[in-house]
Length: 115
Length: 112
Image 1: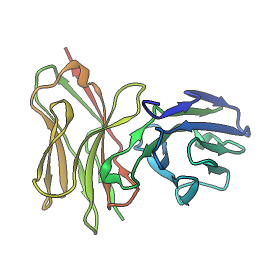
Image 2 (image 1 turned 30 degrees about the vertical axis):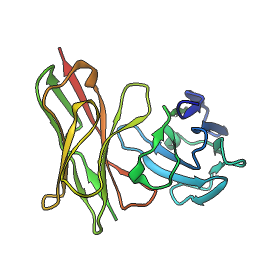
Image 3 (image 1 turned 180 degrees about the horizontal axis):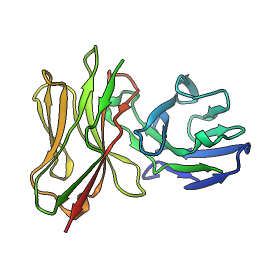
Image 4 (image 1 turned 60 degrees about the horizontal axis):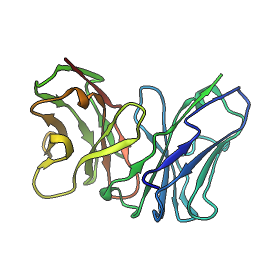
């Protein structure tokens, strides 16, 4: 597609519910990133994929967070047993090259609200 | 470790007036510097970047930024803003790997 597509655009989850957030990167982009943007904060790195390999998951806040990209294209970020502190906008970005100096294309994000 | 400070959370400015959005960073290693813009309900878009060379960099939509190593700053400027520039602006640094460290953002509100 023309850009990075994320779905759903908005998600309201009850505390304790599991959620799955989807990211469709730009076709041909081998690198894919997830960032978390809490209210009033800048985006913070969660995890990085090169093709299907998850090369860095150091930013995932807890073991309730899990990300996958099984075929090297679409990625899913899963949050188990959601907590109120998980409320944030989750941004996906992709790039043909892994290095930041080329710039990334970000999606519009999924706004997760845990009630 | 790196960090980014954006000193102003909100900046109101009248249309056609100049604007400066401030960004200071801290790093023990050389970094690349970036400005991203986020329009309402859209993803972040790269505005400009400093990798090396000339300290004055020009970006899209008439924006420019100046890298000042001694002051560890990378302030964003535009000589004349338009209503359409209303957005949130994020300064970011990267040590040249695949991670950005973003500031907390500055909301630019252009007034008619």
